[in-house]
Length: 396
Image 1 (tube, rainbow, N blue to C red):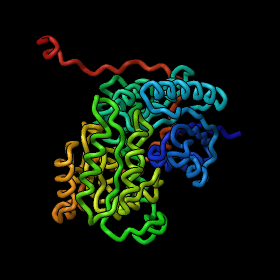
Image 2 (cartoon, one colour; image 1 turned 90 degrees about the vertical axis):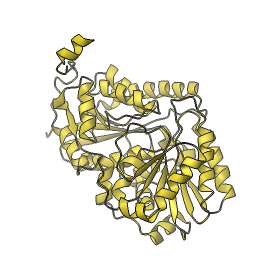
Image 3 (cartoon, rainbow, N blue to C red; image 1 turned 180 degrees about the vertical axis):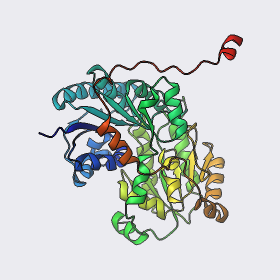
């Protein structure tokens, strides 16, 4: 009988699934692998669009669902949700017995998935390690997952170097580019008329795509910043805005409540829990610009030739293309950034921007590594020391 490697993919959000979808398809289609899918987080919550339905519509069979989100999103509730998730992952890993587990990113449910894999001594592969986001606790979560993982797929060479700097064996760290960019080349995106029809909303003015997530690390008011953003958008009455829900992070629901209020008061605003991959990329492609503090504005949007306005420190430290405009969190700074983004000169400039995350065929590279990596002795990880600069050390 032919051996089929059981590769288990974990997904907890709409955005993460969009990045994993191409890899999942390759695992499912191969005669040499068996795809296992664990769905958790906001995928299973109606408030956030119950996006597990999209996974199933795309032709994937969900192996297990782990309910873990509590109704509250206070810091205490998020910690309790993580605990519930870890219990669920421990039980599901025991039942599915995967050969290797694939995780992406830096969310708290993914930390729970990694922790359960560590304790159950299961090989772990991680995508998008080595990146820096100084304004969010995701920074610490991402690096913690790196130290628990055995195989690493970085989106740039600089991030690969940082993973190695953290003591990971260079032989197990691969620069593959960002997998989310594969879809831009492979999907047939909707034109403006098709996009309007799919949204049941007439887009007859220049529009922007807006996503603002909670900033989880500093002691600052997310609501105050969101209000500054909405006040800035209100100054552009000749535009429409497609606004997506924020992540289910600490105090994210108060942002959703404010967005619902804003959407109800403004007919030029379309508020949606989730666009899904095709509609999101199509909306970006047809938009005037993208604004908020999502990683997508830095990683994927430049490859679609559109400007991104990145607000505040949530993504501070990430490598970014010249099409990304960084601004502060006050109305004046946000408004000035929007004016720059919609200017004729900047609109022309972004069409030729080089995306530092683009390498090509990331999904294929990741799948081939997952299929061929020797797992026999991979659990034991010696710390990989970098050469020491003796002179610098002695001067200390």
